[in-house]
Length: 318
Image 1 (cartoon, helix red, strand yellow):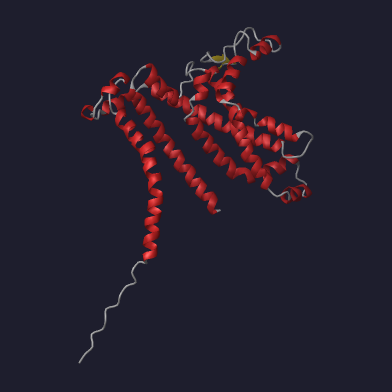
Image 2: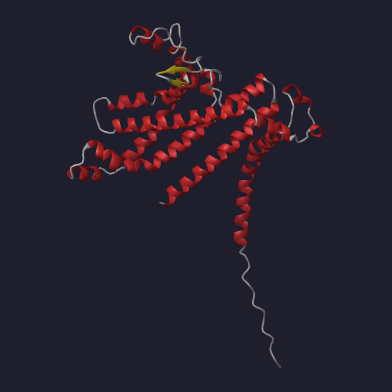
C-alpha cells in the first residue's frame, strides 16, 4: 500500500503582522481623512472651477448640474498677455530674491563666525528682519521709501545729489546710464532680501559650526590666504546647504503675496501670480480665471518640490 505524501503547507502570514497592519491603517486613517477634506477636495474643486466661465456672484447659486468643463476658459487664461507677464515677474522676483538672500545670509554667517566683542548682540540684531511681523516691516519700508517724508529720499536729495525724490514703489521703470531699470520691482526685491536673508544666515551659521577647523588650519600652514581658505575649504562645505536654501527660497518666494501686495499692491510692474489670483478674484470677480492661475502656481511648484525631495534624498544617502 503506497502512502500519499502530505501536501507541503506554505507558512501563512502571521496573525501578529495582520494586526499590526490593521492598527497602522487605523492610526493613519484620521490623518488621511483630514488631508483629503482640507487639501485634496478643495484642490479638486479649484481644478473644476478653473474650467468654468463664472463670476464670483454666481457661486452661491451654482449647482453640480451647472458645471461644464469649458477648456476655452483655461486656453484663454494661458494665452493672455497678463498671465505671462505675471509669470515672468514672479520668476524674476523669485530668482533674484533667492540668490541675493542666500548670498547675503552666507556672507553674514562668514563675517560673524569668529568671536569678537558684542558678537551675540550683532547676531540677535541680524534676526530682527525675519522675526518682525510682515505688516509692520512692510509698512515701515513704505514710510522709508515715501517721496514726501521718507528717510531714503531725504538722504538722497540732501547728501547724494538727487535732483528730486524717487517714487520707488510707484515707478515702473526708468533709464539709468542707458539701461532700463524696473524701479518698483527692484525695490520689492531689495525689501524681500532684507526680510528673508536671516533664515539663510541661520542655516549657514549652523553648518559652519559643524565644520572642523583642522582643514582651515592645514590650509593656512600650506600658505593659503583668508580668501583662498574661504573659497577652497569653507564654501565647498556649504555647497549642500546653499543648494537646498536656493531651492526652498525660490519655492517660498514664488508663491509670495503679502510683501508684494503690502508694498505696491501689484502695481508698477510688480504683479506676481499670487497677486494676480487676488486681482482676478476680488477686483474682476472672475473665479474661473483666479482658479486657473492657482492651478498653474500649484503645477509649477510641484515640479520644484519634487526637485527638492530628490536633492534631500541625495543628501541623506551621502
